[in-house]
Image (cartoon, rainbow, N blue to C red; front, side, top):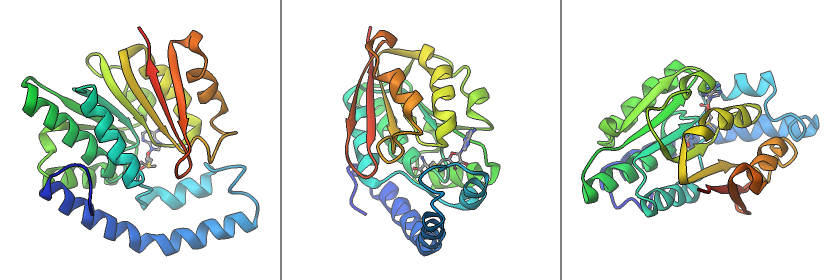
Length: 229
Ligand SMILES: C[S@@+](CC[C@H](N)C(=O)[O-])C[C@H]1O[C@@H](n2cnc3c(N)ncnc32)[C@H](O)[C@@H]1O
């Protein structure tokens, strides 16, 4: 897989994870096609059925979006990165590579704090990050993000929100006070689930809440918000 990381070791792990994710794609297509026929998927993307179905699935962030997260982290020299929704660690590899590269070029420290509610996924994610040579730049907190992200230990430079939609706004409420001025927040699929994300987008798109925000219309949409001073 061609990524912006320029890191053969990380790319090899991403290649393997991409192959593994592809083995799930026909099962996922069948599941969601059936949902569509029942007209359920569009109105309730986070039903208990869906959550049980994706418990062992990658549902990884699109590679181009991962590349963009890497570039954004590099451009602001992000050292404290937070991710809601680690799964098997695909996007985490990009975030950790960005933090590592910032530390390499500027010295000092850096960390990605990921969080994952499924312990088995967190274990595999840690193994994948170690295989990519990035383990020392990541701490994956196992549990509910509303608890695990209450204190991330310092000002947050970059936040990736890639998890269950009903929890995105509550998690934003937990992390927002920890964002430093100029921090970037990226949230996935806001266009595909425009209605479900309404409370989140209303928050980041209202300048009174201290953000400026833009929607990129690509593969379900990506909301990119900047915390102002
Ligand atoms: C879309 S996936 C994340 C994909 C990941 N960012 C990647 O690119 O590989 C969302 C993940 O959030 C996890 N999750 C769901 N509810 C959570 C919660 N309350 N706290 C932490 N993680 C949660 C799910 O188990 C799932 O693995």
